[in-house]
Image (cartoon, rainbow, N blue to C red; front, side, top):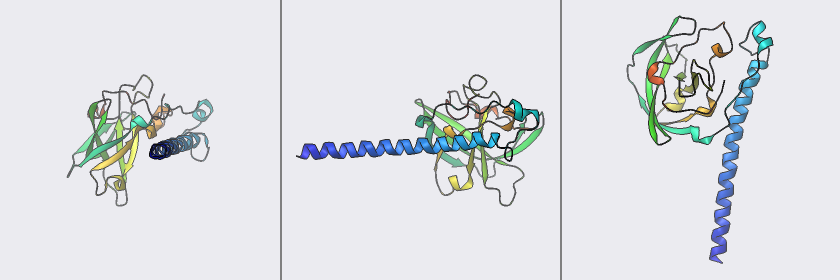
Length: 198
């Protein structure tokens, strides 16, 4: 009898885990569908003129929970202001906000999180640009971005980084923008087969 109960409990736990995994994947798929639709909607698309007509849509790597990682967050007080070259050969400035360290494929990887500079009073946006081993091969050569907010890192030493939500800068699809290029120290020596592909 005890054995039957144990099996039943184990089955419930497995079913619960499976349901949670499906829910997570569906959440990411909704996010990706909304991103793709934003480019097709005339009211929200960043594309202009003939770009709208020639646009072939956005493609994604398969959703993979492997690329949703828990990262150790370290704030940087009085971070340096870094000049970022852009795709339009201009300069944008970002301030170092903090760093993250996470495990992937048995290795520790590190990235720097930035804030736009100069700061504005109510801006809670944090910027995580990066390149990886897929850049220029199966993802956009100019790197990809992840968005975070101050709330994600407030009063905590860990932050969830979901690479399934990475996206391309507008410059991947349009010539009318000046997009910051990720700095060399935000290049990962691993393939991030998640998020927007190219």
